[in-house]
Length: 363
Image (tube, rainbow, N blue to C red; front, side, top):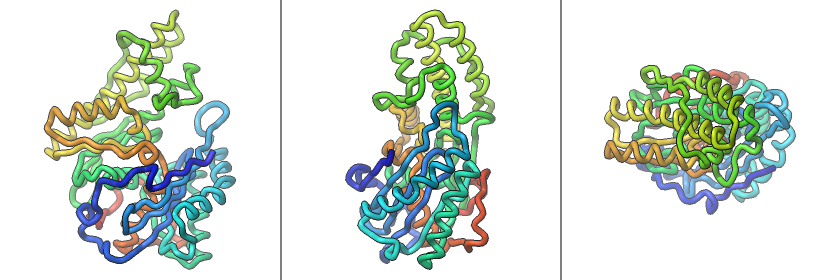
C-alpha cells in the first residue's frame, strides 16, 4: 500500500537550514531525489533548497505473511513497487526527472538484497538522465531530517529503529557513537516479542505499538531483566525472559503485566543511556529519531528526562521518523551542496556502514 506525504501533511520544518548548515550555499535552487531501500520500506522523496524543503515523500512497506523480514522477498517487493512510488513522488513534488539536479541513494547500512534494489534504480536514473549520484548513510539521514524538523542545532541523538539503537553526538566533523545495542535493536525487540507472542501483525494499533496497547491493561510491570552495560544496552535476555514468562502466563492480566514490564525496561534502558550521553557531553538538547521515535510513550519519557536537565527535546513527525525517501533526499541535498558525489562504478552498498565512519563536512 503506497503512503503519500506532502508538505502540508508533514508540517513545516522548524529548522532553518541557513542556521543549521551555514557552510552551504542556500541561495541557489537545487532539487535532489532520494531513494530509500535499506530494509522493509521502499521510499522516494524530493528535497529542495527552498521552503518547504521536503516536497514529497512516498513509500511502500513490505509486510511478510509470517515471521520477520525476508531480505529476498523484501527486495522483490521493492523492485515491484519502485515504478509507482517513483512516479508518485515526482508527481506530488510537481517535477520531472529532468528537473532533478542529483539522485541520492542510501548505500547502507541495511539488508544487502534490499540495498541493491535501491542502488540499482538510482544508478540507472543517474546514468540515463545524466545526473550526479550522491551516496547517503541511512543513519545520518535519520539524524539530519530530525534536526531539520525539530530545529535542534547540536543535540545528543537517541536513534532507535528496527535495526539500530544508539546514542550519538556530533564532534570534530563526525557523529560519534557513545553507546549502542550489544545485540537486538529496540524496534526489533518490540516486533519480535509481539510476533512470537501472537499479538501481531498488525504491529501498530490506534497509533500505538501492540506491546504498548497490551501494556495499557496492566496495573504493575512484570519483573524482567534490565541490562545496561556502561553506555550500551542489551535486549536479547529481556526478549527471552519476556517470551518465557508469556508462555507461562495464565491470565490476560499477567500478559498485560509482561507487556508493561518489557516496554518499561526497554524504554527505560534507552532513556538511561541517552541521559548519560547528555550529562557527558553537556549539550542542551536531545533528539529522538528512527522508527521507534513515533512512540508517544517513548517521546514522553525523553521529554521528561530532558526537562530534568533543563534541555530541549524533539522528534520528527511519525511519517518522517520511520524509513522514508525524504530523509535520503535531504542528506543527498546536503552532500550535493558540499560536492559529495560518487562514480556509478564505485557505488557499492555497505551493509555495515556506521555513521561514525562518515565525514560530515556541512556542519
